[in-house]
Image (tube, rainbow, N blue to C red):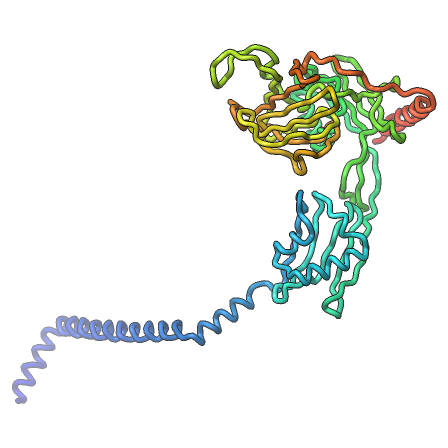
Length: 432
């Protein structure tokens, strides 16, 4: 026995490296099996926990409580919306809406829901109730409702934003377009549209404006004490210098004669604007032409103005919209009856402006839609028609009736107003 043990030990000693290697392999296999076994047990235990209904309820409870208790909403009012519809959209209960309506009725605020203004409110998600609501009466006046300790009542408070009126003078040369030059000077797009509307009765902004022509504009802005601009007021003075020729226009703010007049007291406003779009290119005239899609020669009973998609289109005169719908090959169309003589049509629109529909009365220069390429069209443009006594005529050759001329006491008041404006311009020019 001792001899066998000695031989075994001698064998191990002589082959120690092989023995260690074999032993290591066996140990590794045992450890691997143990690890896999423990891993399987832990995995099964985890599955058992996840499938446990009490664990599931606990997880759901904590995740539900992680969602915000209060929802802060800032909602811009669009056409056709009511306060009730807006609140329902954010899951406010009908009973709560009745409480809010009742509180606003006491302040006479509920009747003043205006398109474009913003309603702000905070909703308690757990109770579907409004904690606070700010209802805009105008850009400078708001009603703030705050829930009281009595959960069904609100405390109301009117918030007035004090605005400071400031007069601004801007002037510059036109290198590419009026729009580009004006925006480079920091003039807001809506003010540029108004400027174009004023001159739209006598100027074709595509053909009449040349490089190095220039302009001046004096207008009002309303801003807060911190300098934030809320809105612009009237254009008090405008001058479009075309090929060296001055075209002065003054704003006259007197009862039934409000508007812009030249230096002689003649109103710039005519029955229809010369072009209902700013910065467009006259791409197809009135008359016989080869239709770009059908390929046949036919009478083109309108004027086409090529412009960038989305360019605003204005009503060329006061009137009532008799149609605002899809009209086949004309795509999205609007038809306006101005009086017993004049009717205008606008076709291939991308879309209609907010609030534009059949039966709506529009003022001259109001944006009614945007340039598109709907219907039978090869590219973005406005197809514009003028109909006189039921007959379609060339809008570019139309002789429009002149605006009124101030007389008597109104003329004297205008002269005083014009002189004051000239003095104001002198003061603005000399300011650093």
